[in-house]
Amino acid sequence: MIVGLTGQTGAGKSTVSDVFAEKGFAVINADIVARKVVEKGSDCLRKLENNFGSEIINPDGTLNRKKLGSIVFSDSEKLHLLNSIMYPAITDEIKNQIQNYSESEKKFILLDAPTLFESNTDKLCDIIVSVVADYDIRKKRIMNRDGITSQQADDRINSQHSQDFFIRNSDYYITNNDSIEKALSDTSEIAFKIMKSD
Image (cartoon, rainbow, N blue to C red; front, side, top):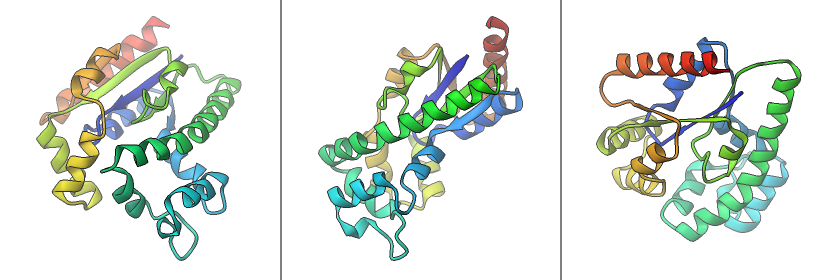
């Protein structure tokens, strides 16, 4: 069974993902996959450089994520272009990892993907779980986590779907505002329900 975990930036997907991992789920982290597909010398990185310019490449040949982010998060056309390059590469690698876990007889796989719906990888999942949190809480979290400005945080948040979208399109959702204990408890309960239903 493949469970898709998604939600808004700063909502706390990592915390929720850790709970599923503790319950025995094999975890595929789409952020890690995204870093893998743009490693130095990769086809995907070459495509990004061709479309966004050499200024997104660090002197050591790696991707300058901050520079790329500053280009795409405030321009919807450029964000769409980025996604059209990244999503196919990410999806192919996710499918490979799902296949590997399936062959090793892992019963429960968690696909932790912030862009689950945008990349259409939700179609690979049997169940969708979203993590949501209030705007101001998410903004503060991502400013602290990523060392970005208030405007950059707003741009990132506003480039994503609304909280209502995630709730409507999920089988389960977890609210992760102030009470981490409640979020962890809700996550454990959902993981148990999923494991019991299979």
